Image (cartoon, rainbow, N blue to C red):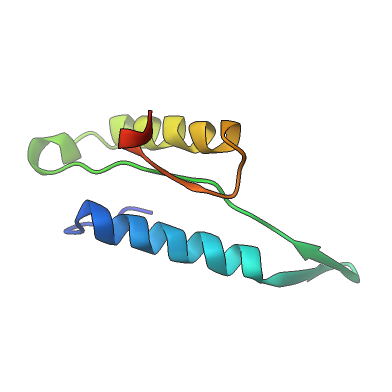
Length: 81
C-alpha cells in the first residue's frame, strides 16, 4: 500500500491496524474456518526518493521478510534492521 503524504508514525499505525484486523478475523474457505496473519514492512520516503517505485517496493519487501524472520504477524519499520 502506498500512502502518499503520510508521516512514518501514521503509516505504521495504518499497517498495525491492518495487521490486527486480519489476525482477529475468521475466514471460511470450503466449509473450513481459517485464521490468517500478515507481516508488513514499512518504508518511509519523501521528495525525490519517491520517484522510483521499484526501489521503494524492494526496500519494503526486505522489511517484510525481516518481519517473517522475526516471527511473522508483525509490522517492521525500516529502522528495525
